[in-house]
Length: 332
Ligand code: UGA
Ligand code: MN
Image 1 (cartoon, rainbow, N blue to C red):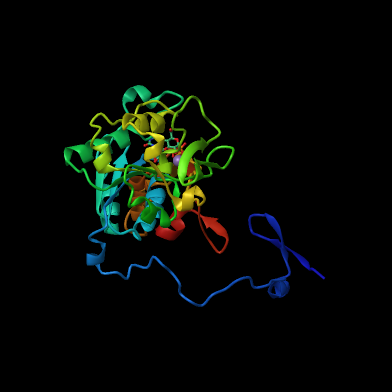
Image 2: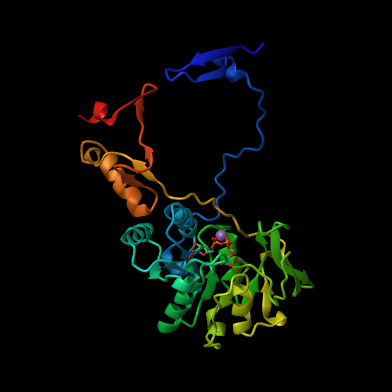
């Protein structure tokens, strides 16, 4: 028999909890388990063995928002497993963010941090060309450096990448393509492959696009791309991929289907819910070195997560033993 106990807290909130003596008796069956470490992607290879791999230029548009640092952190931990990669992080911001520099340096992945602000004229339009100035800046950087070997991939900061994607795209000769999961109503967007050749595209939004693919659904060989000095991406929401692929004169026969003839999903169009940044009301006199709070709020401000304010926002509540007390209680 289940016993319910009413527990009362000091603030008057009531909560029913199951009798804690019974919690070890929950029905449970073990599913699969393994005590063998079968990880393929532990980096146990000496660096020299990577040297003959072509470099993947992984271009990540990013922009200041609360979720920016967590997204880039998550992505960095994926890229840490990928040999011979150069991470181009193009920030939609008009200045070099020193916090991002420190963060990117810490991972040890070869990287370039670029500023690439969206032109003002697009800032307040409803449908923004997201990530376009960023990707254009990255292409410009590649051109300026005269980098004409390797593979270019546009990897947004909020997607989820299977490590197999990297070994699949690394030998791209012209343009490789593969399905992207979690796109629109089908939950998928990608090439239709017959007898090893791409013959069409499965994507719920055609809209006249010759190449109705997601940004994460293709990779380009840089030697091939450099034959098209006018390669570019338009500031035209929805048509970035299509026009870019047109600008490098793509034809069906040049497309190399990846991921076991486009049957595997190696990249997911995951989207993080964006929350607006709000101030936290906390007296500045408490943000000194008496506690961690000063350093913590300094870091939060630098990361673009939240700001401490003397008179705005939701009041900072500090509690112990289930009771909230004024800050002076802890810090005076
Ligand atoms: C989808 C596609 O996956 C993107 O490749 C495409 O750029 C975008 O639509 C579009 O055409 O607008 P979606 O998830 O809807 O992506 O868009 P976001 O993830 O919000 O933005 C795409 C990329 O641009 C992200 O890496 C994001 O960090 C960056 N971005 C977004 C900016 O740099 N500035 C912004 O104002 C918004
Ligand atoms: Mn996205």
